[in-house]
Length: 318
Image (cartoon, rainbow, N blue to C red; front, top):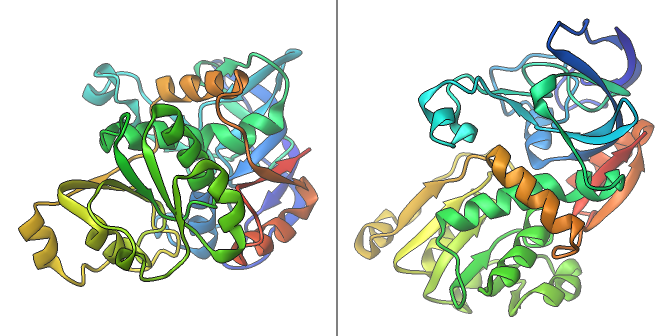
């Protein structure tokens, strides 16, 4: 089955817009016509060559929303086996046989995707861009907030608060009743302040904030040591991402040892959390923040993302 797609033929190089054979659907598959596709931070890491097990050519994209038989649908971004111990325990994000669209099989940077039937779910409305912009980051925030024990009155620091995950995470934390301290760039500070109790733009932000209960570490290597300095004794740092793909080093490991910090990885989200995110967006509890790009302008979208010119999520439309 040939479709028009943005094909990554070489890491760190522009996508090629071309017809590409994505295979044929099997007996348990369906073909979803893509209407909107979000660009995830994970995509940027792949584009840079940060996943050593992946080899081009690749069609990226796991934030897929479109139409199936005239109905508005979303596609769960990962395929799970449903039978491993983690799936049976409701932790399908840790499935032993997890396969991501855009990595193990062609993803949503194309006019259509082939997906297992049980990976497709109905949407409550046809505002595809809204869901492409915010379901993945919001579901990520829901999962990470649970790991960080965020609750009413909890002081939570969020790095990269103006990015795709961060801008939706701080909204969700406010919905939970947490006290939100946002770390962002000066250019995004005024907007981020709408959803924050405090906004800090200094690189050495630990000089201005101390003893937070939890950190949602979205950025990774560039900010993690400042985040740990700001974290209270027995506080939890939830490591969501490492945007630059650089090695993470603890500059003062004794600090974490003596304060008994907990550093917890956050592996995306479960299917249940995706449905929760869809509901919150449908009800208007969280506002999607995004910039729209035509599918054929994917290289422009990447350039803007790399140069931090996008507030929130970049969304490709078809």
